[in-house]
Length: 296
Image 1 (cartoon, rainbow, N blue to C red):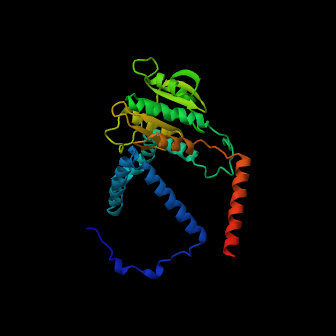
Image 2 (image 1 turned 30 degrees about the vertical axis):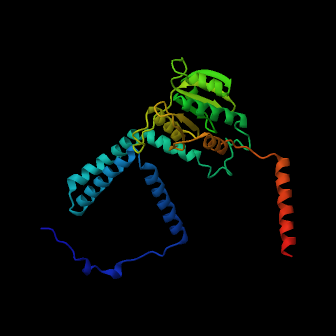
Image 3 (image 1 turned 120 degrees about the horizontal axis):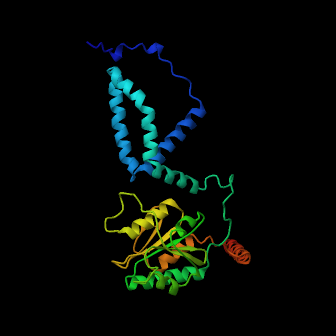
C-alpha cells in the first residue's frame, strides 16, 4: 500500500527560496512573452489541436510519475526524442510560416539593415487608380479576380508558376486578363511596382480553420499568400461581386474604390517631396506663431 505523506508534516525550515535577481524577472517576462506569441500564432492552425493532445499526454505522464509507473515512464523516456522529431516533421509548414513571419518583423531593422527598401516608392499614384478602377469595374459585372501586389518579400517563386506578362499596369490590361473564357483568366496576377509581371499564377491555400465558410478557393488563396509573404492581395468575388483585401493573414471584405486606394497607399511607401515638407513646416511655424500672438 502506498504511503502518502501529509503535506502539513513537511519540514518547511529545509525549504530554501533563492534570492531573485533582476535578470530572473527579465527572463520570466521573455519566456511569458514567447509562450503568449506561440499560443497566439498556433490558434487557428493544426498546431492548436496538437497542443491540446500534448497537454493530455503531459497530464498522463504526471500521473505516471506520481504513482511511480516505471514501465510507462521507461516508454516515455525512449519515445520522447522520436516524438519531438515527428512533431517537427508533421508541423514543418507551420514552423516555416512562423519563421517567415518572424523574419518579416522589423524589430531589429536598425541593427540589421539589409534587405530594406529605404524610402523607395513601390508604385505610382496612377497604378493605384488603375487597380482600383479595374477592381470596381470587374465587381460590377461579377468577374472574378485575384491581384497580388508585391512588397519587400520577392514573389519570384509565385511568378514562375504562371505566364510572364511584363506590362504596365492599366485597368484595361487587368480586365482583359480576368475576362471569362480567356487563356489568362484562371489564377492570380502578380504586380511588381508599376508593372504586371505574371498571370495565371498559383497561390498557396490557407490552412486556417476560422475563415468564413461562404468564402471560396479564391479568397483562401489570397489569404494563404498573405500569410506567407508581406504582399497585399485584392480579391473580386465571381459569385457576389464583392471586393476583399487580404493582408497579414486577415481578410477585409466589402471594399469600395476609396477603401482600395487607402489600402494601396498604406503600402506604397511614398515619401513627401523635400520642398513640400519644408512648406508644411513653414506653415506650421507660422500658425503656431499666430496662435502665440493671439494669446498675448
